[in-house]
Length: 151
Image: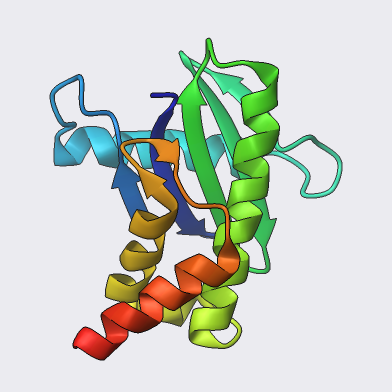
């Protein structure tokens, strides 16, 4: 299971979505999660937006991120993952943003805050136990619409 967590934060470092997938170790405490977010924000905010790659080796993780407007979408995978996985997760971040754009009609930070339930439904359709399970935008959108009909 290479994917440890998925994180979305704004440019000021406030987390808007966070989903942990590492089921083999005990869950992180609230303070540990906060410290993790602060350290990742420091890493990302110190980098020039268009002059660096979207990959950072940090501690025992590879941080893969993409900045869309005022939000960072971040995946953290095991450092021992192959180089190919970096590009897979970068494209999966892009897929996730495209799906959220369709669900919210041009997603923004407020959509993540007030539409968190839909966001996590999309994440759960794309990822399962830290693995990418669905790469079809149409299938994910169809499942999200089915979930909305149940409500």
